[in-house]
Image (cartoon, rainbow, N blue to C red; front, side, top):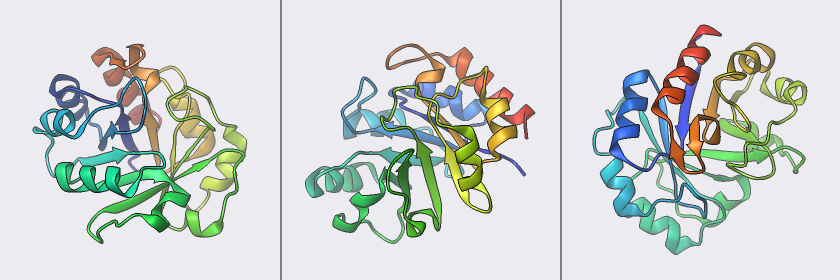
Amino acid sequence: MSVFIKICGLRDATTVDAAVAAGASAIGFVFARSPRQVDVDQAVAAAAGIPATVHKVAVMRHPTAGEWEAVRDGFAPDVLQTDAGDFARLDVPDATVRWPVVREGGDIAARDLEGTFVYEGPSSGAGETVNWEQAAALAEGRRMILAGGLDPGNVGRAISMVRPWGVDVSSGVESAPGRKDVGKIKEFIGAARAAE
């Protein structure tokens, strides 16, 4: 089975296009407070060349209804990724796929694990590696996207240990916080594909 690969926290068309060309399955645009944060106009410009086969993901964390509506209406993401508890109070169209973020050490409800979900450490984008043994138990028979502390050097090991449906990287393919490195993106995707 081909591993789903999300490259997260991209901010410009050059790195987005490079990630797509290298074989990314999804591109994440961070609208939450972060060194990788973009506004709707930046995200629209950066995502202009993304083909329909690659998912455009709006990454948020506890957005207000107004913040989500601005992203929903202005950016029209394929996917909304935010903490599992946020969805109950947001108006998410049926056409927008929901990826709840489930955090290591938090309350994990079985209902949050029914579809595709992102599993990561307590703080998004902090490069914190989760416990892969615990992640492997959660991943079994589920559509887990493993995040947190992945990079070109460890993603192959993570895939072989956890057997996730997908992997997600942000800080692990950067030369500095918020600055993506095209070479590292290609290395990461190559290492993930080699581990399938």
